[in-house]
Length: 239
Image (cartoon, rainbow, N blue to C red; front, side, top):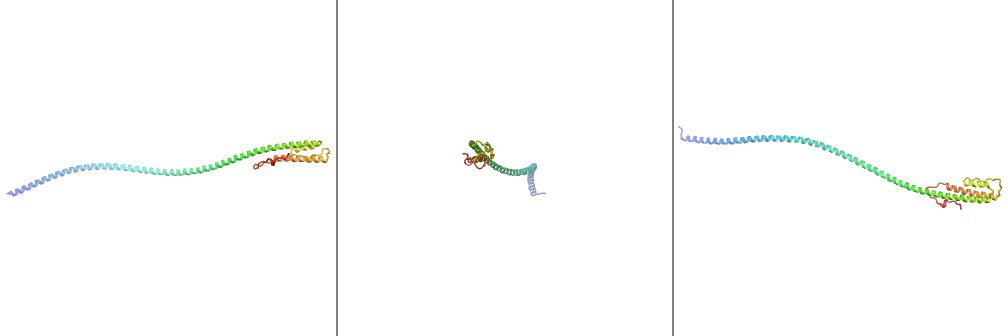
């Protein structure tokens, strides 16, 4: 037979077993609950991972698009830099052309100033020449007036000679030819003159011819542009 002690020992063992089972049940429940939580966490993690993958894909696509945009921007930057270089070259060429145009303008202004100075000098020279021409005209008029006065004196002298020797028609003709600058010696016309009258007539004719020739030479002599006329130097000695 089983003794009481053995029963008590079995009961104690059963109580321990029951306690252990209860403990195991509780632990199993906790584990199941933890498992359920882990399962939910796993599902959440999977959802989060899927979301992360989706976001990563979107980020990759955005990165690709950004890379393409960056490449396009780099190409545009290079093109802009090339255009800037071309613009700088064109600006340098424009500056060189502007400098060349400025030099040409300066040369043209200098030439224009020279031409203006020459024109002014020419105008001044023309004014001087016009003034000298006017002086020459006045001097010529004065000389012509002196010549006319000389001719009047010669006519008076001729009249006086004709009054002193009325029988010399050929001498009168020679005197008239002497007034025209082509004096010819008078020839004997059959009238016999005394030696004193012939000498006086020849001398007066020679003096008259010399005066007429001097007056004509002074009238036809070319006047220099640099020298001015002086009345006392070229005036005829007709008085």
